[in-house]
Image 1 (spheres, one colour):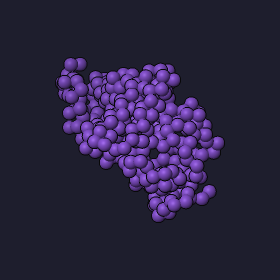
Image 2 (image 1 turned 90 degrees about the vertical axis):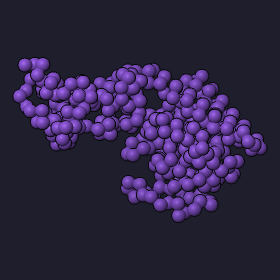
Image 3 (image 1 turned 180 degrees about the horizontal axis):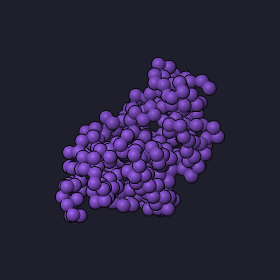
Image 4 (image 1 turned 90 degrees about the horizontal axis):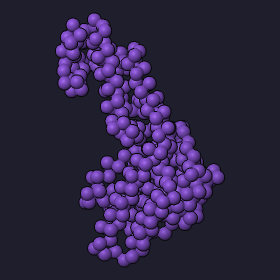
Length: 319
């Protein structure tokens, strides 16, 4: 499959694992050109209708990096998206989110796209409150397998916002254009937060299984010699074991338990520390090292923070 006409070959600059080059798009205009689309109506924001893409994009779809945000609504989508070494089917369609500098690739076989992609550059929102607040929307860090699936009513809400943005972009730019479009983007992200929370609840059986597996992983870590050799488990290491993104795991846990992954790790750690303090003769320093701390002082500080007492004071209550 060839590279689309007009696509600058020097953009193939990074290598994916396995030697396949990825292509970086620094501007929305560059992406439009590669997709065979007309120049965007605004250089920093664009709404792309998938049905308008007519060129062969197999080559660039093998690995892409965008230096701007991408929010995609896909329906009737029988293709797959690959993150890392795994694929995920989007047969049901839904919303996916990509932040700048993320590497994504799409397996295009039998793909049937319909829907929209909203593209907006960080510079477009930089001078607005959303410019700093966007980092709080954790779903930009989720993997493809953690996409947002929409109910029919939610689809109507999302497509309505896209239609409003599309209409605004079609008008002549005035002093209010950017304000209105950014307000619509913020509304889309706020609704997505609400819909994700709904998804956490409606997928409770699946998420309960994930919580159970996470708790078992953390417990096994502290119940064996792993802590001595590997240190305290991290949010990243637990997420890797569970094959979910760190931000998704923490957001899901917060929705179900009120605590994020780091807090769950600390809870298990303190639970194990209390057990060792009450039933063994190990010194506080030995317990600290056994739990994975490099310095006993760090253990003492965390224990006091979580229990309002020191390890030594806690042990004394058993004697």
